Image (tube, rainbow, N blue to C red; front, side, top):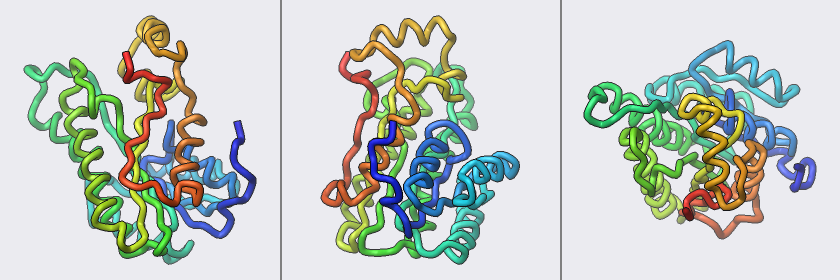
Length: 251
């Protein structure tokens, strides 16, 4: 559903890390539809180029692993040179799988923390010198595991909890320069690779019945929440961790 005026982001430049699929691509598409020029950062060149092409002339493909700060910095500098200083930065790259803590390898735990938490810092830190300030808006993608324990998710829970506090600290430190930093906590979103990897069809049906709104979410609903937080309508909102989850955290 289009709940925002067309072209209200015309002239703005955005970069979306993890924007080649799922919620990230939905956010990137929503930004482009409203007039923004959008650079999509992913580690797979083919996916990044396909995703950028889907934005109908408003996308630029960037290729880097968010765990590699130098590579992220180089690609963001290339994007800023081509498109201009960033008004919007979204850090949404993520990795996850189900694993009990007593069987998980140390490397497996480290990998998820490196992608989710360190990757978020790398994107925001590399973008800092390239921001159009005052007025720049940064957005991280968190998860319900950040505040609610979930079996088999010790790695993701630790990483996402770290993202929440990173967002609050950056909002505190960078606020005086007119930079806003917020996070979205999506609930279970239908059709995403992450939900498919973490659950069966039967589990998803049962999960929907435990959610107060009695359904799974849609990627465009998360994108609409992102549009609000990244727009002038949220000009006095920073350091917020906003749930877009149908009330999933209430039960």
